[in-house]
Amino acid sequence: MKLIIGWLYPDLMSTYGDRGNILALKYRSQKRGIEVEIKKISLLEVAEQLKTVDLIFMGGAQDRQQEIVNRDLQKEKGKYLEKLIENKVPSLFVCGAYQFLGDYYLAADGTKIKGLRIFDFYTVNPGLKAKRLIGNIVVKPLIPSIHDKEIIGFENHGGRTYLANSHMAFAKVIKGFGNNGEDLTEGFRYKNIIGTYLHGPILPKNYFLTDYLIKIALEIKYQQDIKLPPLNNEIEERAREQILKNVL
Ligand code: GLN
View 1 (tube, protein in one colour):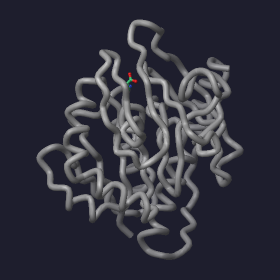
View 2 (tube, rainbow, N blue to C red):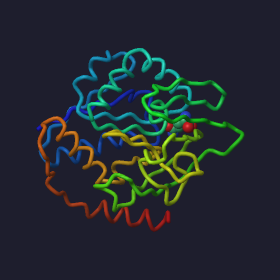
View 3 (tube, rainbow, N blue to C red):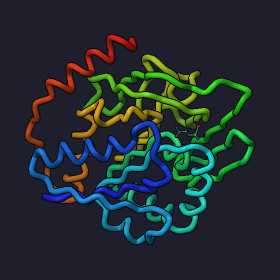
C-alpha cells in the first residue's frame, strides 16, 4: 500500500515544529510497510498536483506569510482543496492554515484576509490590544473513535476564531485557550478534515491521531476497512504522561 501526502506550502507555512507532523505520518506508516511519498506543493507547483494526494497537511505561519499564501490559494488551489475535503480526503490544517478555511482572518495590522469560505467561522487578531494565546494546551477530541484520550499540544496565536456552530469543534479545551480563550472550543472538524490551533507538533505527541489519519487515508484510497497493525507506543505513552503531569 502507498500513501501520497500533500504538504502544502512547507517553505512558508511551517512554525513551531509543524514539520514533525510529516515525520510522524511517515514514520508510523513506514513501520507498517506502507510506502510514503511526500509531495511538497507551494507557490510554484500547479494546483492539479493536489488531485493525486491521499492526505493533506498544512502548518501555521505569521500574518505576512499568510497573506502571500492566501493570494495563491484564492487563485486555483483553494477550489481543489474544497473538492478534496468534500471527497473526504483526510486533512490536517494547523493554526494559520486553519484560519484560511473560514470566512476571513482579520490580521493584527487590521488587514482583512479573505478566507476560502469553505466553513462558517471567522478569525480576528486584536494585535497589541490583547495578549497572544500562548502555552501548552490539552484538549479532549470530539471525534468518537479517539474520544477517550487527551490531545496534547502547544499553541501560539493572536487570532481568535469563532465558529458559527460550536458542535463543529474538533475538541473541548481542558487546559489552554483553543479557538478564542472564551468558549472552550478548539479547532474545527468536518468529514475528515481537522482544523486546529495545536502546534507541538500535534502528531508526534498524539500518536493515535496520527494513526487515525493514516487509517482513514488508506480506507478512502483503497475503499476497504483497514486495521493498522499495532505499534509499541511505550515511549510515546511515557512522554505523554510526563507532559500531562506538567501541564495539568
Ligand atoms: N498569524 C496567525 C495568528 O497569530 C497564526 C499564527 C500561527 O500559525 N502560529 O493568529
